[in-house]
Image 1: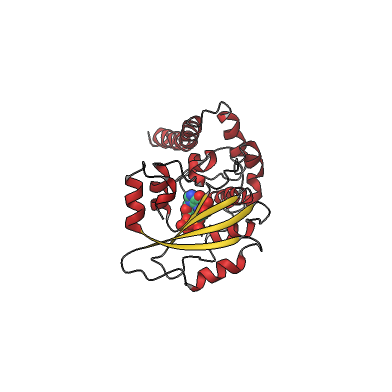
Image 2: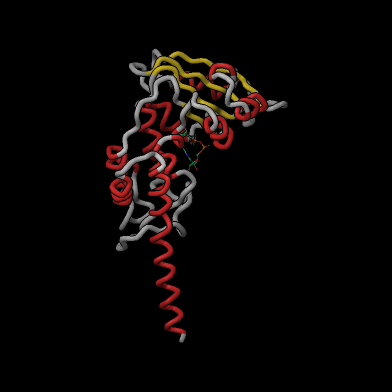
Length: 249
Ligand code: N1C
């Protein structure tokens, strides 16, 4: 009885692990009315299956990015750091700006965890390394690679929503600072508009030291602008999607 119980538990656990991610991936992918979702899943999977989950570099996702490339959305691209919930609430209801999560790959993998295991062809969704546990984990490497690809095609006027309630809105360890800003290219990109989201008792404004670093890091020729906008204003605009794009700040 014990052996049977163990065998059943083991089978269920394995089945559970294998079947969890794919249906979510395919489901979310199909919302973008693509008929190559199975193909994209297969390419995605190749990045991490059978590998030590601490040895998946961002280059492992090169074939995935090639299979589902980012279309440049000049003047509508929205980057962010430490403002995830607010920025998505804002972009969800109106057509003005697009974040990575409003595009195929970002939307398909947002909020998910996955990894493989040496000697296995399965996908696991539990027991995977955390974001900072090791640098080259499958989830972190994906966001690094996808963010890099999106920043590579950034063009025209680009917006970034940063958090004015923390002392370092441009944090060197963030994906925005360590990957995206470094790849912004003046031949395609005209300007970076920072929207610094403040609360009533703001600890930070546009004169913040980390924002000086941001300006220094920008490719020569990219113009810079910073606007302080209250969280209330953003919420107000999120609740009124009929307001025109330019009217929120
Ligand atoms: O490290 P961050 O923010 O500066 O990264 C945000 C930056 C955005 O501009 C996005 O283009 O990098 C991209 N990005 C995502 O789109 C994304 N979706 C979900 C980076 N990270 C993303 N996540 C998860 O948020 C990721 O799993 C990690 O845990 C956070 C990083 O958010 P942050 O530190 O606020």
